[in-house]
Length: 474
Image (cartoon, rainbow, N blue to C red; front, side, top):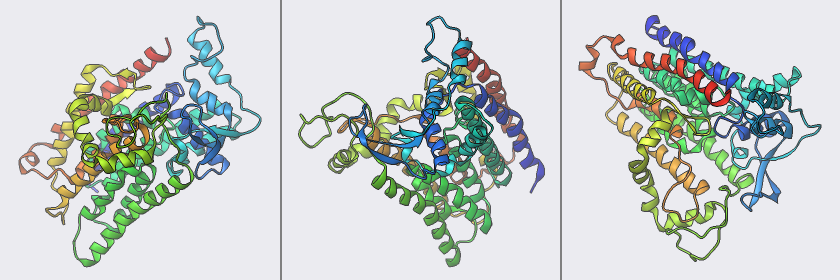
């Protein structure tokens, strides 16, 4: 290892990023991270042995369909959703301190019961293990539900730190781009929560970093990291292509290893998806009854109340091109919003960063890509490396849209609902296999690409705590 090239990104990560993750874990009110309340319940369900959620005989009051969830403590569920105390049974003019005191005093219920969590009940347990351990440790120490959630957040943040540090130390190229991926405001907000998407971003960085190394051990560990990501988020299944483009010789034995690695990335996620379809999946999309959209090939007077995957599959079979092109048509209309969300729409997508910070982070990403291009690719790279890596990225984007069309979009609609820019952050490390080396950029000093990303990180350290104080503690 060339120590300066590896230790500098690690030091910056530990000094400028990790403390901010801890600040978010400690100060952001519970429930003010996307989907965190149901993620808290899913993490805690591991303490009750729930490897996978289950359907319930009862109907979900919001969707009118069968419900799904896990066994948990309703006191924890209330503390997870109470956030900054706005639902506290206090006078309307009660202070924020009084509302927070109420949240912190919420007690445990004497017994566990079924808790509806139709979305996260289907999630694999692996990425919840750190937060579950944090929750369990806090409970053993006598913590109340709110404090236990903070314990789960800190444990998840610690796991993010360890995985991110390994990615920065082990990558053969693209360390600045990986550091930027781990430092984005949206990444930090997720990493300081029980939402496992923060760990997913770190796993994507680690998987890509390990696959840049021409080593058998690194190859299989990189495949394992990507396998956990796909297990948690099946739309990233096309990333199973990446073992096929890892550096090294391309003889017959190594092709067998590459194909085995690709299968190892894909099969756990595929197997879990089958189990979820059989045991857990229920219709989502709460709302009022509605008639199907223009793409529905059946009776237009039929009434639906939720998203129905089977009905949406019928739509796709009749209009495959219209659905397949949704990423293009949606991107043309909302690319700017997706990009801002990619950098960071915080809270419940309600807190925007200062405009200058979005500009700074956009320039930082460009600097990270330029720094990547200034480093030659590892030996053994072939002409098809970049096209296959691009195919992995585009395939993942397509599956994200298709998954949300099946699960979160009204039947027959000519749009896709629920897409957020943060879903695409794990694809940023894939650029390590896309961006070629440039002789021209290689002649420039390596430090040239660092000032803008460092400025973005320092500015985020200054702005984010103030935003938290402004939105939640005044």
